[in-house]
Structure formats: C-alpha cells, structure tokens
Length: 255
Image (cartoon, rainbow, N blue to C red; front, top):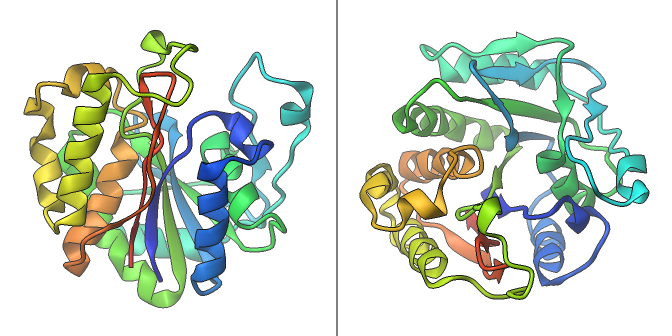
C-alpha cells in the first residue's frame, strides 16, 4: 500500500475542486482500496505522541472565518481501535498513547479524505505530532510506520512543505516567492532521488527559517521520509504548485 504526503492548503479544498484536489481524487482511484487509513495531520500538534482510539471519531472544525458550509461538513468515518493498537505496537520502543476521547479527525485529515474517499466508509485513525520532540523522533516513527503498509493501511501525511501564513500575499494566487520555490524544490529533489534521510539536514538550508517558521505543517513530511527510508523507495510527485506566495501545495507518494 502506498504512503502519501498531501499538501493540504486551505480547508476550502474540501468544498472546491481544483487541480490539487483533482490529483488527490485520481490518486485514490489508482491505488488499492485500503482496509484502514492512518493520518498524520499538522493540526494535532501537542506535547505528546498519541493516536485516536475511539470507535467513532468526531469531525473537528479547527479554523475560523470560513463559510458556514465548511463548518457544516462532517466526515463520519469509523475509527479503528485495532489499528490504534497496531500503531502503538509498531512504534515501540517509542511510546504512543491511546486517545479515547480528546481528539478526533481535524481538517488536516478530513479536508483531504473527503475528496479521496467521500463515502467516509474506511476506518480512520489520526496520529499526533509531539511538539516537544526533535525532528529525528518524527522521522523514526515514520521508519516504524512502514510496517503497516503491508497490512493494507494507507498512511496519509497531511501538511505543507512551505507554510508561512504571515507572508501570505493574495495577489500571488498561484505563485511562490523565490525562497518558497527553492526550499520546495530541494525537498522534492531529496524525496524523488531516494535521499529522504537528508531531510534531517534541511534546518541548515538558507530558506528553512522562512519556509518553516513553525514546525507543525512541515513535520508530517518527516513521517513520509521515514517510510521512504525504511522501504528504500524514492517518492513520486503527485502534484506541485504554490499558493499566495508562501504556501507550497506539493504532494508526494511512496509506492
């Protein structure tokens, strides 16, 4: 089963079709139907590693200022306590806790899955990002998650390679600043040439601080990087592009 990194961008992608959402739909149609989905979302950024373990995760609307139609959306996919237990087991000796009631599926998960699997009939669990841990920790969890793919689990890593909201420039609707393009291009080079382990050196890249002013949207990439390193596979680009100067919409797949 493939693993993917989705540049999810605005939650409005759950409602509006564009070339990025079209690429996600085409990807879902081209791969085997997963028995379950594990999503690593930029929007569950806490000081712990946890995985949702409830049978019916709620839809979380973790944003403001968007049309009411977006707040009305629900993604009623079942959870999978069984998969949550598997995640805990494969991650050992890294500790991951079972979350029975505090979280659910945030828009980093459901805005993507609503396009890929609109019937919401595949079990979904979500894995948090531990804000207290270094990048190596996240990469190492990715190394371990690779084992789930042989059991029919689709791992979806949802974030953005470049995500600088303070520098969003509406006039640059489908363009990227030069620094955004340089950093995004370097990430794509590493992932598509089998050099995923070199992601851990990117904090020294000249554009890292402006491309990644906060780690939340970038860290999901390291989980795909770990999966790629574990499997010895390079990634393919599903779709690429920029939004408002300071957002990258690149999506990648590891077969």
